[in-house]
Image 1: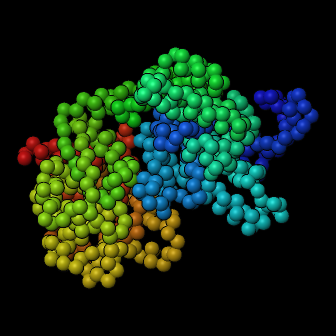
Image 2: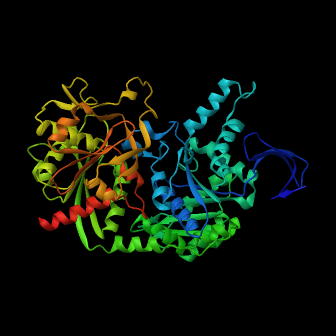
Image 3: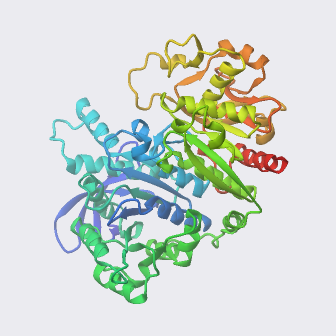
Length: 577
C-alpha cells in the first residue's frame, strides 16, 4: 500500500482517456474515506493568488518565477484562471479589460498570456486561459447531455471538479515539470470562491510535495505615520486560511524596503517561514522583476519546498544583455501611437511591449506618445504630429476615430514619415490611398459604411452568415508569402512567414490591380486564400501596413523584425531630417 502525504491510498483506478487516478483515500489517524484525484504524472503545481487589491502584478510575478525556473532547465508553463462569466475576453471592451491577446491556436485570451509568452519565449494556447464562463458552460453542456446521470448539479463537486480538470489539463501532456496557475481577482471576491475551493482540494489530490501557493499582497506605506502597515496582508491571509489554504510564500509589493522587523511580523502572524516572506519593490521596468525575484531567492524557496532539483545553473545572460541595452540607449525617437483607446494603455499592451523589445534591439529609447484619433482633424493634424519621428496606427473596431486615422495616414505618406499600420491600421492605409491617390472619394470599409460605392475593405466571405460574436473572427496563425525585394521580405529575411490574426474584414481584391498600379504594393499574400496580408508604399522611408498582429509574437529574446526595422528606419530618417 502506497503512502501519499498524510494519506494512504487504499484503492485506485485510472479514469478513461486520462492519466488522472480517481481514488479513495484513508487518513492515517481516522477510518474515514475521502474521494480524491491524483495526478499520475510528476508535474508540480504552483498557484498564485492575490490579496488586498487588484492590479498588483500577479501576471508579472508568475512570469518572472517561470523565467527563473526555466533558466534552471525546468520545463514550465503558466495558465490564467479568470473569475468573470464571459467565455473569453473577446467581446470585452478594451477600456474595461485591456487588450485581448490571441494565441497561435486562435484563442482570445487575457492580456497576461502576452506577458507569459514575452518572458518565456514560448507559445501559449487555449488551455492556458480559462474563465468561470467556460467552466459553467462546460458543466451545463454536460448536464444537458445527461452525463451526470440524474444527479443534482452543484458548485461542489461539479464546478470545482471541472475547474480541477482544467488545472490538470496541461499536466496531462507530459511536457512540463511545473505548471504555474494564476488565479484572477482578489481573495475574498465572491466570484473567485469556487477557484479558491478547487485550489484547496488540489493539495490533497496531488500531495503536499507537488503543491505550493504563492500569495501576492500589498504592504501600504502611510506617509502621515511614516510606517509600513502589515494589517491588510494579515487580513488577506486570514481570508485564505478561512478558505482552507495556507500560503507557502508571501510576495509583498511595496514602495519601500521591508525592514527585518516587518518581515518577522508577517512571518509570525501569517504563519509563513521568515525566508519565505519576499520583498517585491516597485521596479523601473517589468523586465527587472525576474532579477529582483532572483535576488530575493524566490526561485530557491520554490525549488526547496517542491523538492525540485535544477538541471543547470540559472542562465540569464541574454536577459541581462537585453536590460543593458534597454537602459543604456545610444539614440532616441518619438513614436506616435494613434488609436481610440489611448486613455487605457493596457488596450495596446502588446504593441507597447513590442516597442520596448525593438528599442532595446536597436539600442534606442522609444518614447511613445499615445494620441487619440478622435482629436485629429485636417486643420490640426500637422501641429499634432509634426514633432514625431514615426507613426503607428493601432488596431480597433468601429467608426469612432476613423477619419482621424485616415488623416494621420495621409500626413505620414505625404510627409515621408515612417508609418506602421496594424490590422485596422492597414485597412485605413488602403482607404486613405484609395481616396487620395485613386481619387475614389467615397472609398471605405463596409464595417463603417455598408453602402459605400467603393468597398476597398469588405467583410470576409466566411464571416457573412455568422450570428455569434464571440470567438468567430479570423483568429490565430496563418501563412503569408512575401514579395521578393519588398521591405517586408528584407525585414524578415525570408519569404514564408506565419502570423497571428484577429479580424473580420479584408482587403477587397477587386481593387487590387488599380491600387497596385498607383504604388501601394501588396507585399504579403496568404497563399491559401489570396488575402492581402501586407501593403507597402514605394519610394518611402518606411510605409507598411499588416492585416495581422505582429505585436503578439514579439518577445524579449526575439523582438519582432517588423518593429525592429520600423525603429531602425525611424532612427535613419531622423538623421536625414
